[in-house]
Each structure stands twice: as structure tokens, then as C-alpha cells.
Length: 214
Image (tube, rainbow, N blue to C red):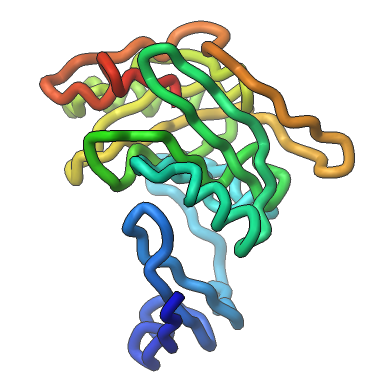
């Protein structure tokens, strides 16, 4: 892979000492950095939302690609991620979940014959009530939903999905499980525990052949 040194302007923008970048799987620019600059005060949400980050990172991202298995190989063999679980959905395809910290997965890939790109990102909040209040705000501001409230079977996340202005999904969830690499055993799942029913808002990314609970 062709690796590029980050410019001083890029490093200043990302608040790091040094970075390199390359074009990774799924047409996503991937950046590696050292020397993260920490703020003098923690982030305080204007709406009183507390996010679950710390040793689990920000959340997770799920990417679509017709070459999902190549992406899995890269993140396992080059980046050092573990394969947490696999979910097989009759109408949604195969999802591969990969982790690098106590969060069940920080990145996942789904086979998609339509296009490459971002399926959704997750922001985990502190409790179920925060998820419910976010759901209410989404309804108040008429944000299109992608999937209803539900709970996943693999990471146990209680969540819902809405569509961002850029077109990809944003999952807001709580109560995701933590993974201990010493004892974790990868499993295969075929459905969610309940909910996460697709909402067809004119884009079939959560319906038909792209129906996913992830």
C-alpha cells in the first residue's frame, strides 16, 4: 500500500503530533497517528448527553463493500483487529464485526453489491433514557428514521437508527456489552433479539436486499 506522511496542516487540524495515511478497504482513507493532543477540559454536551467513550473509543462504523472479506483480512492481518462475531441475515447479507478494545466492535463490514461507503456510525450514550430522548428529538425535528428501536443479539445494544444529512445512518444506543479478549468466543447470529425494523423513507438501504439490523 502507498503510505503518505501527513502534512503539518493536517496534523494541526487533527490535533496530533504526527500521522500517516493510506487508502484502505471500502474506499476509506485510513489515518494512523501518534501524540494525541488532549483538551484541558472534557466535552460537555449542551443537551446534557453523556457518551460512552474512554477505553472503548468513540463508537463504531459499519462499511459496505462488495469486497467485505478483503476488508476483514486487512483489518485482522494488518491492523490487528479481532473478529468478534458474524451475523447472517437472509435479506441483509453477511456482517463481519471487528474489535480492537473492550467495545464489541469498532468497525464492521457488510457485503453490498450496490455501492461502497459508510452504512452507519454509532454513538453510544450513557443509558436507555438518553436513547429515548434522542429518539424524541429526531421525531420533533423530522429526521428520517432508518430502523425502529430494538436490541441487537451480538453486542446487546439498545438503539435506533436515523439518516444523517449526508445519507448514511447514525445509530444512537446504550448498554452495549464489553468484550474480554481472554474469554471471548466468536459466534454466528441470524437475527436481533427484538425490533430494529426497517423504515422505508424512499431509500432501500434498510429494506429489501439491504435490510440489516446492523
